[in-house]
Image (spheres, one colour):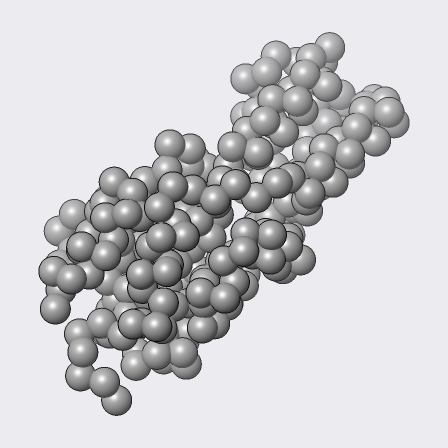
Length: 234
């Protein structure tokens, strides 16, 4: 077993390596326009978020659950009178989400190139398996990772399991991501470093307070700052 303080680095995918929430926001705007004859945009968005919260336990994270939540919201908003053509358009928007182009974020490729070979790199993401596999393939980043884990949720147990299986355990691991709730707080609870890389758009259900008092919490402005941060740990 290595005695280095850090041997394994986990990376979130959506809104850490590539754009994601941006496309959901555009889809939601289109959805509110489809139902504009029945309610105002703010009300529709609020009802959609309520549906998403309810459905996470049933459908999990990802586009398919989001699409079903839009359909459920449309039925509720219209009291069951939603036209079939609107349902068809909602299904179309869901399919469009499943085929949107992959736009990698700044500094991603250079950072992965610098770290690959020096550390075990693990992609840890949640959501729809097919969609995450598609985005990873289209991103051209797959070869940088020693392992890929698509999980139903991210908890301290999840990180302990993955970092023990892939690396030398959570104490010698780091998780990098844009979600405090999913990427940072549970990774720190597992004993790992948690490096927060804020994204300008973050889903409201992923927002929690920064664990500023946690000794292993770190925050950087962009991924280009990660290598320097890691050097400071050694």
